[in-house]
Structures are given as C-alpha cells and as structure tokens.
Amino acid sequence: MPKNSELVEDLGRDRSGWRPEKLREMREAHGLTLEATGERLRETARCAGLSAPAANFQTLWQHEQGEVFPGPHYRRAYCLLYQATEPELGFRKALPGEEVDHQLTKFSERVDSGHVQAVVQALKHLVPTSAEDCGKDVQQKILDAWRRRHTGGDQHRPSLLLIGGFAGSGKSEFARFISHLTGWPLLDKDPLTRPLVERLLTALGCDPNDRHSETYRTQVRPLEYQCLMESILANVECGISTVATAPFIAEMTSPTWMRRLVNRCAAYKVDVTPIWLECDADSMREYIAFRSAARDAWKLSNWTQYLDGLDLDLRPAIPHLVVDNRFGSAIAVTDQARYALGVAHA
Image (cartoon, rainbow, N blue to C red; front, side, top):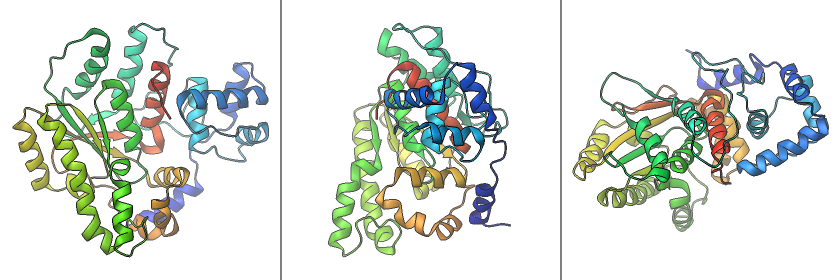
C-alpha cells in the first residue's frame, strides 16, 4: 500500500479535471476584462472576509491559460464572484454525488426561500456514517437556530457539536460557519489556548511553536485539551448549545472518552454530535501553507514524515457526521452561503 506522502506527490503532479479555459469563458460571459475581474475579485474577497488576492491581470491571464493553478484564496474568490462551484469553473472534477448546477442569488434583507436554499445546500455536506441514531436532526436544529434569530423560539434540546479533523482539513472554517448560522458560541482550541501553550513550552525550554515533540504530547497537550473541555463543559452545564473545534484525534477515536462525554452531557440534557472533516492530503498541505502559522512550520518542513504518521481513514469511535471537504468542496459551499447571508467576517 502506498504511503500518504506518495499519494500527495501524485496529486501534486496531476490536476485532474482542471480546465482553465472555463475561467475565460465565465469572465467573457460576464462581460469583464482581466483588469475589471481583478478589481471585482479583490472587492469580493474583502466583503467576504477572505484574504484578498493581488489579482493583477498577468496572474489572472496565467490562470486562464493554464500556466498557474489558482491557490485556495483565488479559487474561493472566483467561486464567490461568479456564484459558481469549483467544478463549474473548471478547477477540478466534481466529487461523486456533488451537485454542480446549483446557482445562488443575492439575498434581500428579509429571510426568504433563497436564504433557506443556500443554507440547506451547505448543510447537505453533513452526512451520517451509519444507520444509528446519530445527529439525524442536527441539520434541522442548525437551520431552526438560524431561523430563530428572526422568528424566536426553540423546540430542540441544546447541542454540543464537536468538529474535528487533521490540520488543514477546514474544521475551523466550518465551525465558524455553523456558529454564524446558529448564533451558538464557538470554542476553537487554538485561539483559546495558544498564549498559555506557548508560554508553557517556553518555560519547559522548548520552541513555543512546537506541536510534535514528546514534551508537547505528554506535558502540554493534555493541559491544552483540559482547558478546552472545561470551557465546553461550563457551557454544557448552563444548557448552552456550543460549537467546539480542535483536531480531537485521540479524543474522538477513544470509545471510553466519547462515552464519558456523552453521558456527562446527557445529565444536563445536552446532545453530543461529533462531526469529522474529511479532506485530501494535497488540499490539507495547501491550506496549511496558505495560513502560514508558525506552529505549522515543522509539518511543512517535514511533510513526508508528518503525512506518513497520519491515518487518513481515521474516524470518531461513535456514530458521527462527516463533512466531505476533499478539494475544499464543503468550504467553498459555506463561503457561498455566508456571502449570500452577509455574515462573513475576517
């Protein structure tokens, strides 16, 4: 069986399904010059809270000629500008079952069927992995929570959504999207614990950006997750629905850990739904490189070693939902929904 790193090398050489002429066709169909497209891409990215691409006409021309494959910030901005998906813009082939004919329209101030359509389309990426009773109504809960911001009232029990996955899988982006929709508080491990983690690593004589050494794994990581879980449980005990995101690799794959959490939350009448972000290795590397976080330096410098240590088939130990974010497909759809709803933030 080939190693993960070997698969990534193959993916890196093969942009299967890339049809750069589709970008030119889309631009011309909208009556835009390269210069005008660049201006609109920058403005679209700014309004959506994305990193604004330089978008000069030379770069856009290279995209259309197939000389340079657009990076993630360009692809997301293109999708929002043209209100299209990556397959429709020729960036890649559609995933099995992926709908590519859905077009979003700009929303008015009131909540109408167009708003609901955009949100429902994004929530379709929450897919149960078994026939067991796992989050069967979580999509409806999320949709109702969003509607409740306009109509009031809530008929559901509080929920704890645990959103996990490997670095660069898109879990923070997806968690922010759910939080925007529902108004549920978001607890993200990295911003919540990073200052303490960095100070503790420094006190232990380690690099503050270390996330791979034995010292980090045995002395720092347990405290990092303890801080996160205590914050989560403080909300649970108050009956507050919460969106929590972290890799949760060891935690979600431990039946004992998951049962203990489910039982504790059940005591406060709070439902627990694990959500796993599935992503291909090539896209994870692209996301990690793009965000340029100091804590990722070791991963990028030792990518083969890092990747071969991952089990890309890993999943939570109890019934759960999966978000298929291979090639950034789910995050692209959430971008569309957030942009249409006008709730995107940097």
